Image 1: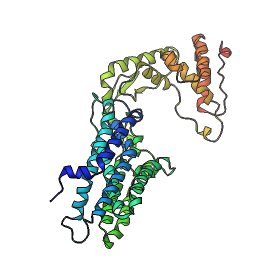
Image 2 (image 1 turned 90 degrees about the vertical axis):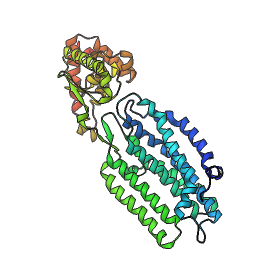
Image 3 (image 1 turned 180 degrees about the vertical axis):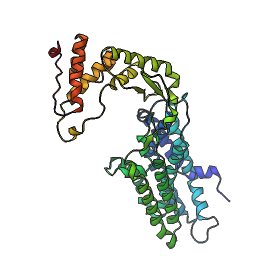
Image 4 (image 1 turned 90 degrees about the horizontal axis):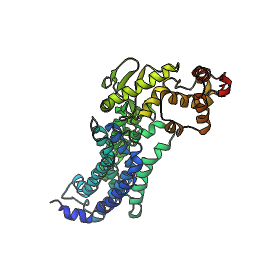
Length: 408
């Protein structure tokens, strides 16, 4: 006969740890919300995994406590009435429930940032997050059955925290993909989570659960298999994600975009279609103003915000007139053109019609001063200044001449 839930909850440590964990998630959610691409469900779901750095150690500690309690009760000695799996599930039920509640809360706290926009949460990412949390709870339980009383909980909690937090600082980028937290690198509006970045940590988590079950069996043949099972899961996962490096995202299918117009050609994702009229109007204004100044812009306009502001669209169109890539020669030597990049970007944004206060806030005062002085020159002189200094952005053998007085 299974133990009544009121008794399970009374003897379990999960409800007490759960209060502290949920309060911590509430306090920390503001830091996570800053990482979200507003209006994009894929990003909201991916950033939920950030909170695993707190959820997983808490569940590992709870699992270790429950393992200690089961071991002290000697319920698994002799010929138990219930199987090992039923005993473990009964003991871990509150901890596993806490994991689901914690993941749901972590998601719910940032879900409003995508509320009202098309799409839906990623079931795969949410499933992975719950699976990783479960794996740490089960791993902690196995340690509770095995380690000395004074070590089980601290080792489980610290080991879980190190595994969830430390790989993000490692130079071996593929290691970051294995614990489930690297999905915080995803996703901009033109990206989706790479399937391998979900499947690889899911396989590691499944390997942890299987290895923990074998180790908790306390039978020599099974215990010998536990390290091999975990090693196999990690090896296969590592091979799968090694080509990704630290990247957790891949390009979003271009078929989801809708493009209109020709000069400019405005391409929008489903989340942006409600603002299509404004985006198209702003992009057209920027192209017209820059063309009147003699500047050629890029053909396509593709904004990476679900609800962009006028200044964002104008500055985006303006930036399309500047080469985006640093020349290869700059990787091994000096790049004089780097000094021209700021003033040129400011001048282009102001010429496109962006708000001077907004533009100035993103650049150094000296760069802003140069761009403002250039804007006072005759139009032909401004264009000459731009063309002369833009040449230095794609090469390393030419010095920029930013002094506006040289063009009067």
